[in-house]
Image 1 (cartoon, rainbow, N blue to C red):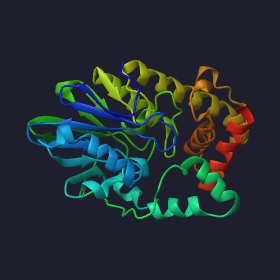
Image 2: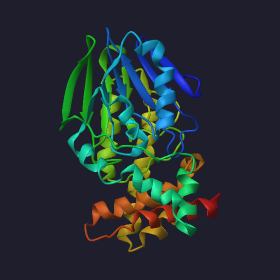
Image 3: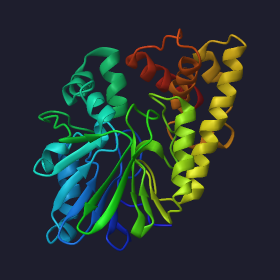
Image 4: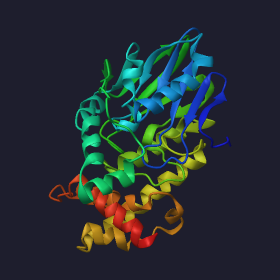
Length: 311
């Protein structure tokens, strides 16, 4: 549909996507909605250098339409750690996302990347490309629950909360006049979704909502620009994992054993397929509140081990 290359792509008149191939861990997309004299930025990036490069590339558009508002689609750092670079704008997120941002400050990832031994090696294998030093976590200045419609230079932009799904407070951004949706991490295209929060049923419902909007262009949180066919593929993956994990949970199988046992069919060609470990565990936890998930270090260890074993 569009070339999947680093940088700014104008997907329709006044709606842009900023893409970061290959869309793997931390290499997220962002967006810009340009109105009359002002713009809305959809997400910042994982560190200050990446965010600076993005904002510089957007100057041909923002010089005459400065960024007056920012939407953080969710709390993961690759969608909000660059907020300090746009701190003069109104920063908007769901109330749940704003609360969740406090849980993983950039200093935590900096410390994990710098840790000695196996833990440091593990986290550098995922996040070693990024510089988390010197980042000041800059929270939203406006929060909402459910839905918020805002105006950006005469254009209506609809913010719709669809979490908890990927995280506790996921939001999609719909630009009706352009038939464009920015999905945040409700969509990973050519990469495997990771369901930190769940339940998967909520995420499946979010895919249905995106499809119902009738957009011509769908900008995912990671991966190349797509349309509703890409939404359907993500929905199919989530439905498959939910069904297969539920059967194994009902049979008494351990969650990690279930993740290793589930054949991913065509989905096995997607990047980061080891995320199935987290996704199956989320199914178990959603269906049984007594289920205890492993800590985040163990979750990353399992993902790495599965990919090494099957890579």
